Length: 311
Image (cartoon, rainbow, N blue to C red; front, side, top):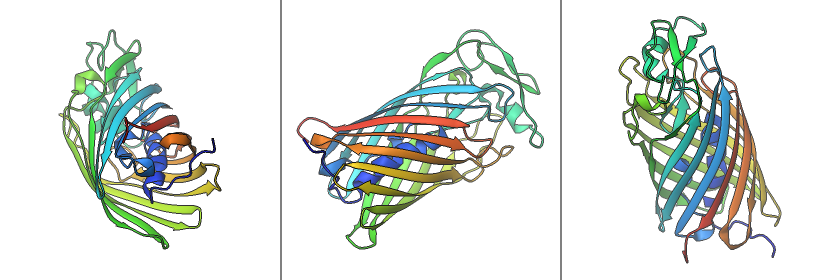
Protein backbone atom coordinates (compact mmCIF):
# COMPACT_ATOMS: atom_id res chain seq x y z
CA UNK A 1 0.00 0.00 0.00
CA UNK A 2 1.31 3.45 -0.90
CA UNK A 3 2.11 5.57 2.17
CA UNK A 4 -0.44 8.25 2.93
CA UNK A 5 0.69 11.80 2.41
CA UNK A 6 -0.10 14.14 5.29
CA UNK A 7 -3.43 15.89 4.96
CA UNK A 8 -3.97 17.48 8.36
CA UNK A 9 -3.08 21.04 7.45
CA UNK A 10 -0.01 22.18 9.39
CA UNK A 11 -0.36 19.45 12.00
CA UNK A 12 1.99 17.02 10.28
CA UNK A 13 5.07 19.27 10.29
CA UNK A 14 4.80 19.94 14.01
CA UNK A 15 5.24 16.25 14.85
CA UNK A 16 8.33 16.16 12.62
CA UNK A 17 9.80 19.35 14.05
CA UNK A 18 9.02 18.35 17.64
CA UNK A 19 11.40 15.44 17.77
CA UNK A 20 14.25 17.41 16.25
CA UNK A 21 13.82 20.47 18.44
CA UNK A 22 13.92 18.45 21.65
CA UNK A 23 16.60 16.15 20.30
CA UNK A 24 18.62 19.30 19.73
CA UNK A 25 18.40 19.82 23.49
CA UNK A 26 19.17 16.18 24.12
CA UNK A 27 15.63 15.12 24.91
CA UNK A 28 12.78 13.52 22.97
CA UNK A 29 10.12 15.71 21.43
CA UNK A 30 6.96 14.32 22.91
CA UNK A 31 6.05 17.25 25.17
CA UNK A 32 5.84 19.45 22.07
CA UNK A 33 4.03 17.18 19.62
CA UNK A 34 0.36 17.20 20.60
CA UNK A 35 -1.14 17.76 17.16
CA UNK A 36 -2.29 14.44 15.71
CA UNK A 37 -1.61 13.60 12.08
CA UNK A 38 -4.28 13.06 9.48
CA UNK A 39 -7.11 14.52 11.58
CA UNK A 40 -7.01 11.83 14.27
CA UNK A 41 -8.44 12.69 17.67
CA UNK A 42 -6.23 10.61 19.99
CA UNK A 43 -2.66 9.53 19.32
CA UNK A 44 0.09 7.63 21.08
CA UNK A 45 3.68 8.76 20.49
CA UNK A 46 6.94 7.29 21.67
CA UNK A 47 10.62 8.00 21.23
CA UNK A 48 14.10 6.90 22.20
CA UNK A 49 17.06 9.25 22.21
CA UNK A 50 20.70 9.36 23.21
CA UNK A 51 22.79 12.42 24.00
CA UNK A 52 26.33 12.95 25.20
CA UNK A 53 28.25 16.00 26.32
CA UNK A 54 30.67 17.34 28.90
CA UNK A 55 28.68 20.54 29.36
CA UNK A 56 30.52 22.49 32.09
CA UNK A 57 32.14 19.48 33.74
CA UNK A 58 35.39 17.51 33.58
CA UNK A 59 33.55 14.26 32.85
CA UNK A 60 31.11 13.43 30.07
CA UNK A 61 27.41 12.78 30.74
CA UNK A 62 25.67 10.06 28.70
CA UNK A 63 21.86 10.10 28.69
CA UNK A 64 19.32 7.65 27.25
CA UNK A 65 15.66 8.67 27.16
CA UNK A 66 12.59 6.51 26.57
CA UNK A 67 9.45 8.62 26.41
CA UNK A 68 5.77 7.81 25.97
CA UNK A 69 2.88 10.21 25.56
CA UNK A 70 -0.75 10.66 24.60
CA UNK A 71 -2.31 13.55 22.71
CA UNK A 72 -5.94 14.57 22.22
CA UNK A 73 -7.19 17.06 19.63
CA UNK A 74 -10.45 18.82 18.90
CA UNK A 75 -11.31 21.22 16.08
CA UNK A 76 -9.22 24.01 17.64
CA UNK A 77 -7.87 22.80 20.98
CA UNK A 78 -5.27 20.11 21.68
CA UNK A 79 -3.65 18.64 24.78
CA UNK A 80 -0.75 16.28 25.43
CA UNK A 81 1.05 14.62 28.30
CA UNK A 82 4.30 12.71 28.37
CA UNK A 83 6.51 10.92 30.90
CA UNK A 84 10.19 10.12 30.24
CA UNK A 85 12.33 7.30 31.61
CA UNK A 86 15.96 8.45 31.85
CA UNK A 87 19.12 6.32 32.11
CA UNK A 88 22.06 8.57 32.98
CA UNK A 89 25.59 8.23 34.32
CA UNK A 90 25.62 11.53 36.20
CA UNK A 91 23.34 13.50 38.47
CA UNK A 92 24.45 16.92 37.27
CA UNK A 93 22.12 17.36 34.26
CA UNK A 94 18.53 18.16 35.27
CA UNK A 95 15.30 18.37 33.26
CA UNK A 96 14.30 22.05 33.07
CA UNK A 97 11.35 23.06 30.92
CA UNK A 98 11.37 19.58 29.41
CA UNK A 99 15.02 19.73 28.29
CA UNK A 100 18.34 18.75 29.93
CA UNK A 101 20.25 21.62 31.56
CA UNK A 102 23.64 21.40 33.34
CA UNK A 103 22.50 22.62 36.77
CA UNK A 104 24.93 20.48 38.78
CA UNK A 105 22.02 18.78 40.57
CA UNK A 106 22.79 18.64 44.29
CA UNK A 107 25.99 20.50 43.40
CA UNK A 108 24.11 23.46 41.94
CA UNK A 109 26.00 25.81 44.23
CA UNK A 110 29.26 24.80 42.53
CA UNK A 111 27.76 25.72 39.15
CA UNK A 112 26.48 29.00 40.57
CA UNK A 113 30.00 29.89 41.77
CA UNK A 114 31.68 29.02 38.46
CA UNK A 115 34.06 31.73 37.32
CA UNK A 116 34.54 32.50 33.62
CA UNK A 117 34.52 29.51 31.28
CA UNK A 118 36.49 27.19 33.55
CA UNK A 119 35.73 23.46 33.72
CA UNK A 120 34.09 22.22 36.93
CA UNK A 121 35.86 19.27 38.52
CA UNK A 122 34.14 15.98 39.34
CA UNK A 123 34.59 13.06 41.70
CA UNK A 124 32.89 9.70 41.86
CA UNK A 125 30.21 8.70 44.39
CA UNK A 126 28.56 5.35 45.06
CA UNK A 127 25.05 3.99 44.57
CA UNK A 128 22.09 5.70 42.89
CA UNK A 129 20.69 9.22 43.18
CA UNK A 130 22.39 12.41 42.14
CA UNK A 131 25.67 11.69 43.91
CA UNK A 132 25.25 8.27 45.47
CA UNK A 133 25.05 9.72 48.98
CA UNK A 134 28.20 11.83 48.66
CA UNK A 135 28.07 15.62 48.86
CA UNK A 136 29.77 18.10 46.53
CA UNK A 137 32.60 20.31 47.74
CA UNK A 138 32.97 24.04 47.06
CA UNK A 139 34.57 23.40 43.66
CA UNK A 140 33.71 19.79 42.68
CA UNK A 141 30.44 18.05 41.80
CA UNK A 142 29.76 14.35 42.35
CA UNK A 143 29.24 11.91 39.48
CA UNK A 144 27.64 8.51 39.96
CA UNK A 145 29.79 5.38 39.97
CA UNK A 146 27.27 3.70 37.69
CA UNK A 147 24.28 4.38 35.45
CA UNK A 148 20.96 4.95 37.23
CA UNK A 149 17.48 4.59 35.75
CA UNK A 150 15.03 7.28 36.87
CA UNK A 151 11.48 8.34 36.05
CA UNK A 152 11.62 11.94 34.89
CA UNK A 153 9.21 14.81 35.42
CA UNK A 154 5.96 14.71 33.39
CA UNK A 155 5.29 17.45 30.85
CA UNK A 156 1.86 18.80 29.93
CA UNK A 157 0.82 21.06 27.06
CA UNK A 158 -2.32 22.81 25.82
CA UNK A 159 -2.52 24.17 22.27
CA UNK A 160 -4.89 26.40 20.33
CA UNK A 161 -4.96 26.66 16.52
CA UNK A 162 -5.51 30.37 15.98
CA UNK A 163 -5.29 30.29 12.17
CA UNK A 164 -5.10 27.76 9.32
CA UNK A 165 -4.96 28.62 5.63
CA UNK A 166 -3.75 27.56 2.20
CA UNK A 167 -1.65 30.59 1.24
CA UNK A 168 1.93 31.32 2.15
CA UNK A 169 0.93 31.58 5.80
CA UNK A 170 -0.30 28.09 6.64
CA UNK A 171 -0.91 28.21 10.39
CA UNK A 172 -0.53 30.13 13.64
CA UNK A 173 -0.89 28.32 16.96
CA UNK A 174 -0.59 29.27 20.62
CA UNK A 175 0.46 27.03 23.50
CA UNK A 176 0.82 26.73 27.26
CA UNK A 177 3.17 24.17 28.78
CA UNK A 178 4.44 23.02 32.15
CA UNK A 179 6.86 20.58 33.68
CA UNK A 180 5.50 19.17 36.94
CA UNK A 181 7.95 18.60 39.85
CA UNK A 182 7.56 14.84 40.27
CA UNK A 183 11.28 14.40 41.02
CA UNK A 184 13.60 16.33 43.32
CA UNK A 185 17.33 17.09 43.18
CA UNK A 186 18.17 13.81 44.89
CA UNK A 187 16.91 11.90 41.83
CA UNK A 188 19.67 13.34 39.65
CA UNK A 189 17.19 14.28 36.89
CA UNK A 190 14.69 16.68 38.51
CA UNK A 191 14.74 20.08 40.21
CA UNK A 192 11.73 19.72 42.48
CA UNK A 193 10.24 22.90 41.04
CA UNK A 194 7.52 23.84 38.53
CA UNK A 195 8.45 25.24 35.11
CA UNK A 196 5.79 27.07 33.08
CA UNK A 197 5.89 28.37 29.50
CA UNK A 198 3.71 30.16 26.94
CA UNK A 199 4.48 30.44 23.25
CA UNK A 200 3.47 30.59 19.60
CA UNK A 201 4.27 28.70 16.39
CA UNK A 202 4.04 29.92 12.80
CA UNK A 203 4.17 27.72 9.68
CA UNK A 204 4.62 29.00 6.13
CA UNK A 205 4.67 27.04 2.91
CA UNK A 206 5.43 27.19 -0.80
CA UNK A 207 4.34 23.97 -2.49
CA UNK A 208 5.90 21.06 -0.62
CA UNK A 209 8.48 23.25 1.13
CA UNK A 210 7.61 24.47 4.61
CA UNK A 211 9.21 27.02 6.92
CA UNK A 212 8.57 27.21 10.65
CA UNK A 213 9.23 29.50 13.58
CA UNK A 214 8.60 28.57 17.20
CA UNK A 215 9.11 30.67 20.31
CA UNK A 216 8.07 30.43 23.95
CA UNK A 217 8.81 32.32 27.14
CA UNK A 218 9.54 30.09 30.14
CA UNK A 219 9.54 30.77 33.85
CA UNK A 220 11.82 28.28 35.62
CA UNK A 221 11.77 27.19 39.25
CA UNK A 222 15.05 27.95 41.04
CA UNK A 223 17.31 25.41 42.70
CA UNK A 224 18.33 25.94 46.35
CA UNK A 225 21.76 27.34 45.39
CA UNK A 226 21.23 28.30 41.75
CA UNK A 227 18.78 30.88 40.43
CA UNK A 228 17.83 29.96 36.86
CA UNK A 229 17.18 32.77 34.40
CA UNK A 230 13.70 32.89 32.86
CA UNK A 231 13.80 33.42 29.13
CA UNK A 232 12.92 32.43 25.58
CA UNK A 233 13.22 29.03 23.90
CA UNK A 234 13.13 29.16 20.10
CA UNK A 235 13.55 27.13 16.91
CA UNK A 236 13.49 27.83 13.18
CA UNK A 237 13.84 25.58 10.17
CA UNK A 238 12.79 24.35 6.78
CA UNK A 239 11.31 21.05 5.63
CA UNK A 240 10.73 19.46 2.25
CA UNK A 241 8.13 16.79 1.47
CA UNK A 242 9.16 14.55 -1.42
CA UNK A 243 6.13 14.02 -3.67
CA UNK A 244 3.77 11.22 -2.66
CA UNK A 245 6.49 9.16 -0.99
CA UNK A 246 5.46 10.34 2.48
CA UNK A 247 9.09 11.19 3.27
CA UNK A 248 10.20 14.62 4.43
CA UNK A 249 13.61 16.12 5.18
CA UNK A 250 13.97 18.85 7.79
CA UNK A 251 16.83 21.08 8.93
CA UNK A 252 16.54 23.31 11.97
CA UNK A 253 18.34 25.45 14.51
CA UNK A 254 17.18 25.70 18.11
CA UNK A 255 18.29 27.31 21.30
CA UNK A 256 17.33 29.59 24.12
CA UNK A 257 18.45 32.60 26.06
CA UNK A 258 20.82 31.92 28.93
CA UNK A 259 19.28 29.58 31.53
CA UNK A 260 22.22 28.88 33.86
CA UNK A 261 23.71 32.30 34.73
CA UNK A 262 27.30 31.00 34.71
CA UNK A 263 26.99 29.14 31.39
CA UNK A 264 26.49 30.11 27.76
CA UNK A 265 23.07 30.05 26.11
CA UNK A 266 22.12 26.66 24.59
CA UNK A 267 22.33 26.40 20.78
CA UNK A 268 22.08 23.39 18.43
CA UNK A 269 21.53 22.45 14.78
CA UNK A 270 19.58 19.40 13.60
CA UNK A 271 18.93 17.33 10.50
CA UNK A 272 16.22 14.69 10.31
CA UNK A 273 13.86 12.54 8.26
CA UNK A 274 10.21 11.65 8.74
CA UNK A 275 8.25 8.90 7.02
CA UNK A 276 4.45 8.82 6.88
CA UNK A 277 3.09 5.27 6.70
CA UNK A 278 -0.38 3.85 6.10
CA UNK A 279 -3.28 4.09 8.60
CA UNK A 280 -2.01 7.35 10.09
CA UNK A 281 1.28 6.02 11.41
CA UNK A 282 4.64 7.80 11.15
CA UNK A 283 8.33 7.34 11.96
CA UNK A 284 11.01 9.98 12.41
CA UNK A 285 14.72 10.14 13.17
CA UNK A 286 17.33 12.86 13.51
CA UNK A 287 20.85 13.88 14.50
CA UNK A 288 21.81 17.03 16.38
CA UNK A 289 25.12 18.81 16.98
CA UNK A 290 25.56 21.18 19.89
CA UNK A 291 27.12 24.60 19.31
CA UNK A 292 27.28 25.67 22.95
CA UNK A 293 28.72 24.38 26.22
CA UNK A 294 25.18 24.28 27.61
CA UNK A 295 24.01 21.83 24.90
CA UNK A 296 24.91 18.17 24.36
CA UNK A 297 27.76 17.67 21.89
CA UNK A 298 25.78 15.06 19.96
CA UNK A 299 22.22 13.72 20.09
CA UNK A 300 20.33 11.07 18.14
CA UNK A 301 16.55 10.60 18.09
CA UNK A 302 14.08 7.99 16.81
CA UNK A 303 10.34 8.45 17.23
CA UNK A 304 7.02 6.90 16.24
CA UNK A 305 3.37 7.94 16.31
CA UNK A 306 0.08 6.15 15.65
CA UNK A 307 -3.64 6.65 16.22
CA UNK A 308 -5.30 5.11 19.27
CA UNK A 309 -8.33 2.85 18.81
CA UNK A 310 -10.82 4.05 16.24
CA UNK A 311 -9.91 7.73 16.58
